[in-house]
Image 1 (cartoon, rainbow, N blue to C red):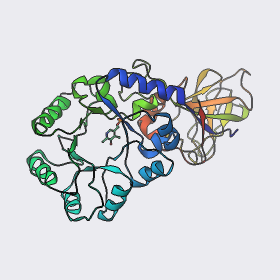
Image 2 (tube, protein in one colour; image 1 turned 180 degrees about the horizontal axis):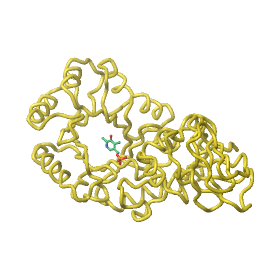
Image 3 (cartoon, protein in one colour; image 1 turned 90 degrees about the horizontal axis):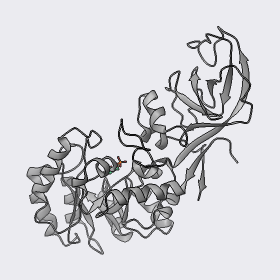
Image 4 (tube, rainbow, N blue to C red; image 1 turned 90 degrees about the vertical axis):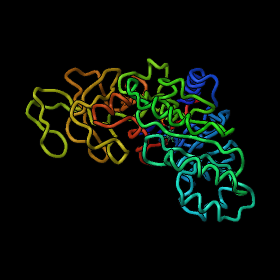
Length: 358
Ligand SMILES: *Cc1c(COP(=O)(O)O)cnc(C)c1O
């Protein structure tokens, strides 16, 4: 077995889906598996979650990977198509697509398609990234309803910018704008990301779109995954490849910005930025060794990082190390680094092999 590996616990994945379904009992689940299922392996994750209503991805290449491995569920392209010439592929592969821009509408109207496209029309209720402004929305909707290239009914969606802030009433405002524009449509309505599934039940509607919570990571800064009854799916593991006595005043690794205050023992872990562990992780970033949290010290290098094991001889070469996951939530590591766990799990490189546990 590779020593540097991400163990993917499929039981935890199924458990998290159950929690989400229980939290939004009236809604279909659109499982968001973009970016290689947030680094967890898109094909295996899709196979494991095969009973969901649909999958959502960001890129056509991700959708084609799913189709070529025999995934028959509806697949939604969250960013739609970027190029009119992709429309025939969407039709041929039965891919649904989010429509958010006038350019896309024009391309759909002009296309010659063998079958009409299944589309999701996106209303910009306040994120101001993708989607039609409320003033344009009704006209665009009508125009697409009149097009033979579009399957009816048209499904509708919007996306929240601050659903993870449980006291921010921007979400209620976004919901209210959405409600003002969906009256005439008999299509599915979808708003909720993971945070909204838990914090904003009034946004559940026909289909919810959880991503991060499926992987057992909390979307909230101050509510833990455990509090939400979620279990981490990915555990990033490696081993100690050296354990060294280290004298007070000695530095470690590149540069000299960390020197030991006291005599100690340094553990060298086979994990670096070449694996996707962030180089910017500061001194004190937690690492789990033999059941205890020890601090990262010195700079993260390409293939290794170093931790302060303290005195005592409980750790030896070959011992398992957990960088995040079971026993050490990725959220905690991310917070120390100044990022979010979404980025940590998504950025692992191909050198880290994924090991699936049923
Ligand atoms: C990524 C994404 C989601 C999932 O968000 P999470 O915070 O991971 O639950 C839902 N909807 C859209 C449009 C997205 O881009």
